[in-house]
Image 1 (cartoon, helix red, strand yellow):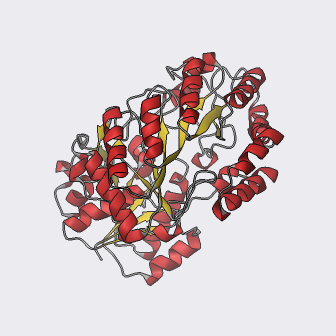
Image 2 (image 1 turned 90 degrees about the vertical axis):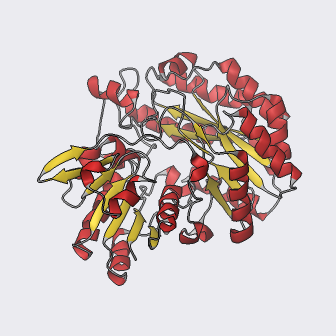
Length: 459
């Protein structure tokens, strides 16, 4: 084996709601890296410790029983960065002679933080599809774009690598190396199983202040509908997948591509259920009706707040009337509308959270997702909070979206934290909502989803 790609354990606190309901899907990024490496003749293995629900000791025992490899790559987001560093330490204890590479969102944004660890040798910034193969092929370090590394105690950052424009040229993820049999979507999303995620584009053109486009770029790059359709067919034929969650930041942004993909699914009479995320201003009734015919059963909209001042503070570029239209059209098309909201945003008050709760109910959303604002590195919100001394913590394990890590001048953090479950319960435990939800139950899978959600919200 030439390289082991590793996704670190993802450890939520015992009271963290997301830990009870969040998706358990394999790391597509590692799957893409693996397929590119395999295409160049390298032998690759993936350990997705997050999906496998492994702890650090189980990772250690896995490595001890594995053959020694010259290269190990670890992926990390901000919330799992501390976990990735702990795994890096374990790796170097078990395989001291290997070269360790770290990549993903957090190392891209904070490469020096990663390289200050004595266990991390290299950081790949942004997309690693071409950078990692060049590194393990032995190309001189100073010639590899997108690479950061140590040179006699000095940290060196090479020039960035241009974003990949032709996504169709990238092989499909190495699904044969991923634990698809353990894949499940977030509670409330999955209509049929087995289910998994698929990525039809990279990048985001919106400039919301709580989000960073540094890693994948502010220009959206699209795969062709035919290329996406071929991957869907592969997943259905070879792995029995019956449902797909399109993980794009806004699946509906390229209207032409959406219509073509839906037409392909309808024309070929593919029995597929799917859901996606979409921007409020990137949908229309005609497109939504075609999506429904093609198997779409749920769309998640990033609504964020029921207060237009807060939306402006987040640079959302939408109005509450835009939201009302998008949700109404979605329901008219026969698709469930899921609303994602963020509590504790700049300008938040107890009154604004009450307005958001009332807005959720007014929209009669089928499902909601609530997060507490986490000012992640690379975002405008992080810079604003840092400069104004609002950060409560920079311990990344606290950035779990279920508790406040900033102290706003307009509301106490404990009030925001308390409202998270209060708003969930107020929305979901309404008799009218529960009755309508019961009417939508179509099988055992729906019953299991409902029971799991009730259990998570009742504790």
